[in-house]
Image (cartoon, rainbow, N blue to C red; front, top):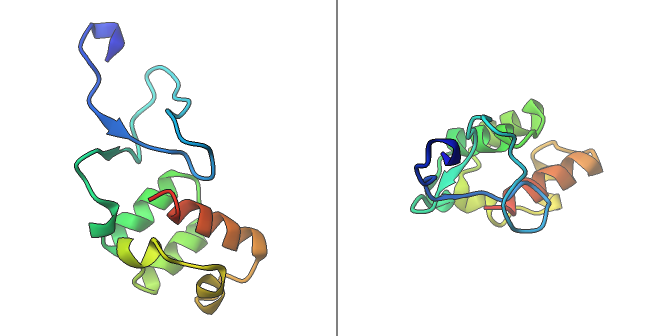
Length: 105
């Protein structure tokens, strides 16, 4: 990292529901949930997607629901509020968090 004089690896990350750009990261914080530039979220399975969403602070009941309903990267990219309601995520704020999280893919 910068303290060692070595360049940082190329990472791409946008925090959920925030404008693009680099996230606020505290010095020494682990790079949990970061995605390498060459990795396509559309190729993720439901487990990888659930882990990614959990690392962004989505409640476990939402990430578990995604996993139980086999929501992978391709499906997540086009999820709507109606889709989430159909999976049993009924609270409007939980739906909003779910949609915001997956639209960051």
